[in-house]
Image 1 (cartoon, rainbow, N blue to C red):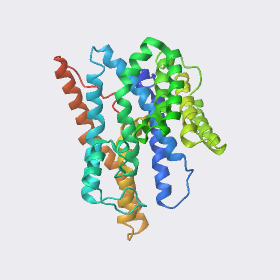
Image 2 (cartoon, rainbow, N blue to C red):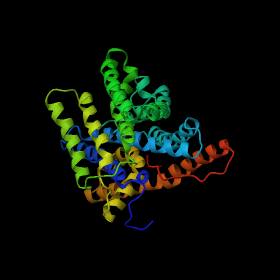
Image 3 (tube, helix red, strand yellow):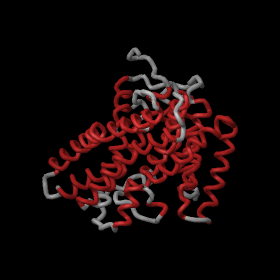
Image 4 (cartoon, rainbow, N blue to C red):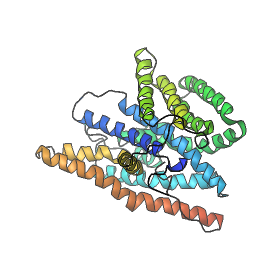
Length: 350
């Protein structure tokens, strides 16, 4: 592929850009809180919501690729996701517990019980009302639980198409409104419309529509979705309810923009997207070490350590742990299929 040629849609630079924006919003939000600078309070939440939309869209593409290769869209999908999500989270939770790392730089250390540690290792804290050992871990149980139904949504969408998915989004809103009156353990339902918005983007025709609008309108649309979230909340709509139309706007809009072509931004977005999981999981611990443990050191030392670790830790974890585990998952899937298979890291950042 020539350098200036647009990538296939499953290698979309626009999706890399979206994921990079998501993790940077969370990163900057927590950095501002660390220094007692009052940020836009929905910033971190909006970043996570973007992750939810992005993840479900990318995993629809993943399911399509699995099916095209003749793999089981259930067994292969679940195995690959387990090897994608759990190795790094288990490693980082273990490190936090062993080193007595605070949940965030502004929190004191709270010694978790054995049960709390198990729930964090299994990423099921929301089901048992257990606090995460690091604040950013709160969102991962929702992603893991959503993985269970994504193959079913893929099959449903193949049968019912875009109109069926539109109806499903409306149903997901209804379920989300009812859920608080049933059980807090079903809190995934509150984020259902956000995940379904990404599925909707796929069946709207992410790979098939001819993009009409210039890339510059894509970041403007993301900002517009943030404006929807802020505006609705200011009007008295609950933050969770306000998130549903904001996510829907991103999901419905994403197929319509031409691919990012400016090479520096493409490269930066791709790199941040590749290491985004490590950035997301580790940045609070890096901030805690740099600005709490080293608080007696000069500021330039603290910032040098912070910048260095913010880059080095996610990169090292990706190459030493994430990528090998992704390959291991692909290898196990290929062995179960009883045929050689080349591992595919194209959508690993998803």
